[in-house]
Image 1: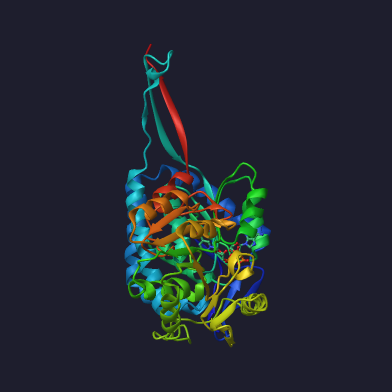
Image 2: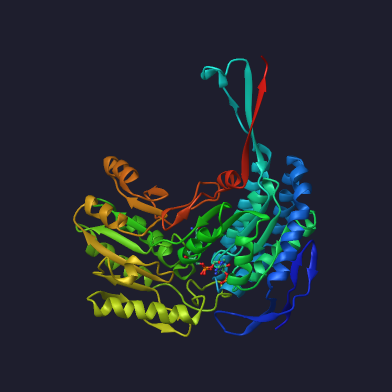
Length: 475
Ligand code: NAP
């Protein structure tokens, strides 16, 4: 072990009372020593953010943008180092980790641009009797201290989706990254310090979700919580947050529909990538595929062949497509779910076993909607492919879910595409692509147990600002 980190509070690296070992999900070797903050240490971080509030609020937009622009160039210079950190702590295959860093840079660029266009509108008060002779406009003011709680699966880019808009909108932040992926956030703290962010505007506190998370969620000085993670934790946060603004980006069991008339050769590689990228540990990972009966057999044959070409191995090897799951517990859980499906009549056509902590990419057929591999979020390299007789049946299957983040449909028929756009109950319908499509300026978020609120810088800025109305009486 050669890395030791301290808490980042008020622009200083602060020793914590307690540390724990961070291990690689792939090799299980210890890779770093990480502080475990207690409630008093989280309190210091909130105090420091509260002190930085006025500085951030008064900072002109061009300065907030300039800090984010400098962050972008520091990220560009150190992009390979950033990708290696993600690969090491999350076991994300290095090529996928590089893609994440490229997207992180995009996200901060969008945040730098967005900082310059936060504005309100004028309101025609004379539209109401009694409103004559009055001029009214709204402004968007920074909301205050943001508590950001992030998951392990995109440790740089999903942090960027919170820290970028928070700075753009003039808010200080206390960031609590996932316990498995703290190094990415400490790396960001270093870069933002070099980029000239005032002390206290970003504080990073690692430690148990229950201790650190609870303090952030219940402390009255924290104005807004932005959380990305599992529905179980997200719902608990919402229940405890009182009147705080709460944005929840939660899980899903995302689906794609493949209509008759679609050429499987054109979409197979993309569907395989959507199912197995980062071992399926992506909130919009492709988990359920509903294929029209006319092309079902051809689709399944080609999908399985392409899946079997994926290379498993060390995340730091550029040839690796699929590496270890985030924890041993997840390997056991997913093997149990596969076994349950098998016992209830599903067919495991490829995969279904683990090598060390790597679950071999798995394809299941004839899965019923009540099996865990279908109705729960698998968050693993497992995909089900079911036959449907019509798109109407497929829409019903897709909507038969607790979740509703994004859904995709491949179709050559414009009427079917428009029907899908109308009937699928999700935050985003993606026509002629997988549900896994995301770029970082689009509104992103879910319905049902997939969450509340939207990210995608402009939309996150709305969540992180308060609208204020100003009325001039000229009578
Ligand atoms: P998780 O277990 O819910 O953890 C997410 C974060 O919450 C971590 O920082 C965790 O800390 C913290 N936490 C745990 N218990 C808490 C509590 N009681 N109060 C406050 N915070 C608490 O999720 P994960 O396993 O890291 O990530 C996978 C999940 O995230 C999946 O469900 C996935 O779909 C979802 N996700 C959603 C999106 C989206 O945009 N919709 C994107 C990516 C991921 P510890 O690590 O210390 O436990």
